[in-house]
Image 1 (tube, rainbow, N blue to C red):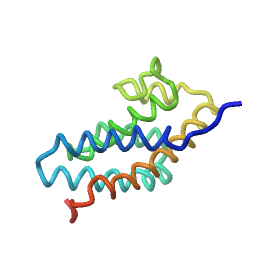
Image 2: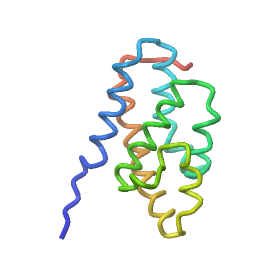
Image 3: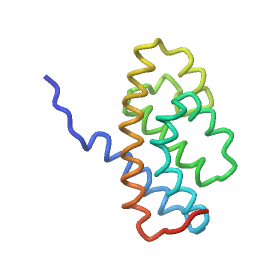
Length: 132
């Protein structure tokens, strides 16, 4: 029997956001990152995984785009889809080609991951306030 460790999801999210935060000096971009991380769950639950992946290419604000990229990198690692190229440019094709059970399972994992992004955004970006 395998035991679930909640840190399995929390740790990569915390590390991804902390890395972005430490690499970013621009206050506008920090606000974009925080805002996007907080909004991930709502976007995903409303529009779905394929639209979120498509949105990654469409986002004009670099800070928001960085967070969506990190989200898909974390999801790819957690779902053990290294060959699936979910985080890369072929991510939409990967999602489109999953069977229904795989897609629904990935969406469930993705929603749990998005909740972590929302929580950790508040902790990691605690001193960043305001909208972009």
